[in-house]
Length: 261
Image (cartoon, rainbow, N blue to C red; front, side):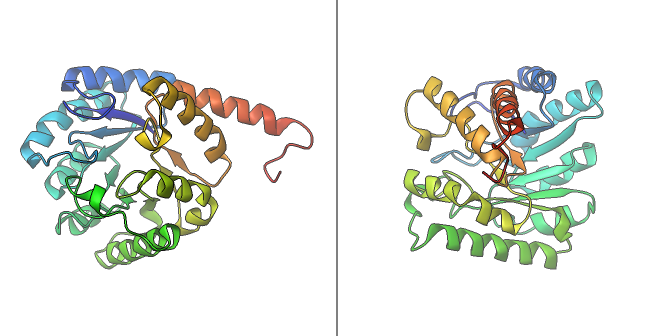
């Protein structure tokens, strides 16, 4: 899943207008992305909410151009708002990636349920981006995140969303300290018991170091997570992730180095 930010303030690659974001998305497809995740509102810690109209002004031109040039593209839109979700699903997007787990907007679950083929990524966080850094208190982060994601799934199904259309994101860096994020990653196989697992680790601060160091750390995790039960990796550097996958495949092709090792 290649990340396409059409925002002025995303933490590592913001500042693109819709035209630039669309060009970037098309390049990620050329690099080998299976899915594009397009976002018009930064949800980094401390980010402020934008209106649905402003978010749509940023996102819709990107969705429309990419589908015009690549109608086969599978598009996800990163949004917490029902109005945005409905508009982009009507336009041809197939996935709604809600970092709030459908909890930010009370109308979100019912809105998405009107599109029976739509996939929903349930993201785990606590509070809004403005306040999440103060909501990192867990007695057991793995068990609590799993329990809260399972509750989100129950609510989604009650609203009419098919369970088989739910993907699960433990929210690395969202209301999590660096240590808590690493603890979640160490329990990836356990988390994958919830259903298809999405991990968004790319370039995040828990990796430490400068951005170049984070790209290297991201690629290393891409290698590990591919064989730890993750269904979708959400990354900035699609080409780097695929290089890590090729290395992993070459490694596991050797006798005695299978996936069970």
